[in-house]
Image 1: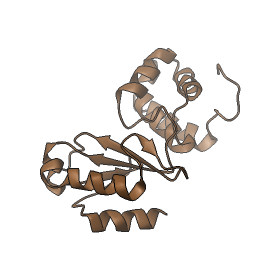
Image 2: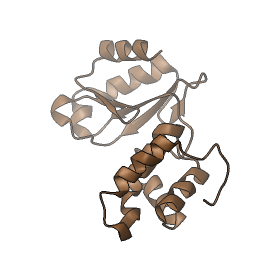
Image 3: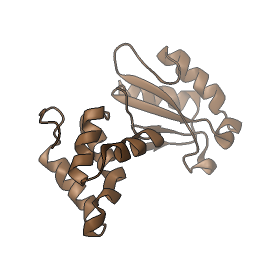
Length: 165
């Protein structure tokens, strides 16, 4: 690996999960597993530092710039530190028509931060997201890219934030 820094190394469990992703593709196409590998790395480390992206690229035998392109193109990857709980609120048209604008203001006031910011205690990061494919359940948000919360109201948002404290 390019960087021997142990803080960037992934656990054996994460490497095994990446190997499962790699096995889905022909042996000469390991780099096709880059999206899954970056997701696994981010789940373990919290966010994708440049050296961690390079580590993943080395593991997959691909140029680091190609992994950077993926990590910076898709909004589910965090290339800057985020809070322990990343709340991504969909603000696309269907969610907005169903109240996402008001929920955005409620979240900003409740957390004391704007989109793209993290609370001082490092607990919450608030992100604005595009369509997440749940228009019939609008408005909605994602928690840490993995848990979807739908049919949101200010009361449901408050319950969610209380659970995450």
